[in-house]
Image (cartoon, rainbow, N blue to C red):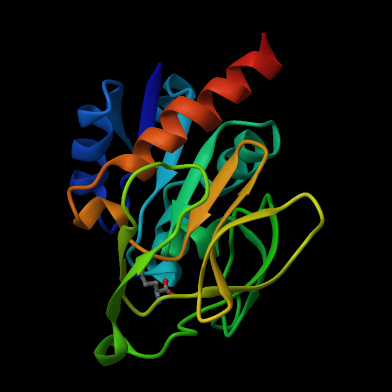
Amino acid sequence: MIVGVLALQGDVREHINSLSDCGVSAIEVKSLAELERVDALVIPGGESTTISKLARSFGLIQALRARIKAGMPTYGSCAGLILISERVLDAIDGQEGFGGLDVTTRRNAFGRQVDSFESDIEFKGITGPKFRAVFIRAPWIEQHGDDVEVLAEVDGRAVAVRSGSLLATSFHPELTGDNRIHRYFVDVICRDAAKVGA
Ligand code: GLN
């Protein structure tokens, strides 16, 4: 299995490292040809407005939308969550996303950069101690459809969800050296999607 990391802006290298530690081939995706090579995709944190503009100028938006809709396992972290959300609050005018995930996400909901914080959270689906979650100008998930399962919450706000082949977190697991969420994506979500496709 080849897992791509959308490599337009943001925490690309860190996700490649975390995925490699999980034993999969991880490659950068910044062209249509690279997108076609991958079986699954991680959309990193960074700045959703910038990633969206770059995805448009690299001619990737339509193909990303189509692959996500067709069931490609996709994990969006922070800006990546915003980009795969069907509905975004506090987006900038004309901000385009890739959609697919039936949630309403509020950008910068936890506050500005100075309000970034860390929290030890319970994450449904992984075992062991609580997960140290790093939130940086983080969004939260304000509303979600019936097929969306909430995997983690902070202060009663959904910060991690799964819906079929899609996983999203409003925090950054690639920054902590704890690969349990990448492993959950690879071992549970990608494996389930492969079963459905088989
Ligand atoms: N606030 C950023 C955005 O709107 C996301 C921040 C992040 O990815 N750490 O894209």
